[in-house]
Amino acid sequence: MPQAGPGNAAFHAVVTGRVQGVGFRYSAVREARARHISGTVANRYDGSVEIDAEGAMPDLQRFFAWLQRGPPGAHVSNVDVEWRSWTGRFNGFDVEF
Image (cartoon, rainbow, N blue to C red; front, side):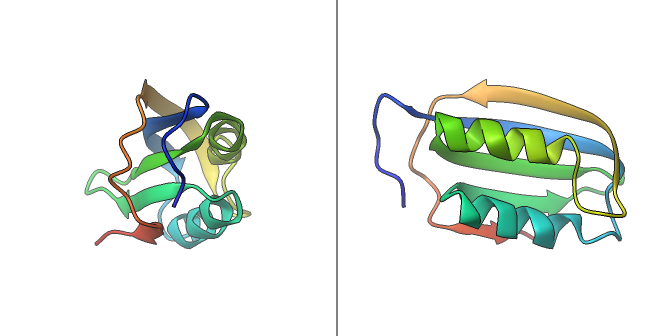
């Protein structure tokens, strides 16, 4: 789990488009874990995907860039993001149901 530090941050994002039924959540888990990012990803009832992520700012920026593309088969139309302060509340990165 990342430790608190001056280079750590967080964001809450909602990804819209064709992002359910295309492996988006599980691909996001792989991408986040590869970058040592903690948080969660979940489908929302409106067809979007919601992400909470925390980690080192350079890793978060790369993960955010990936969210704008998504996995093969996805078509991301928008990513609404709110950057936040790091809290350390997550342990790993997982799918929420």
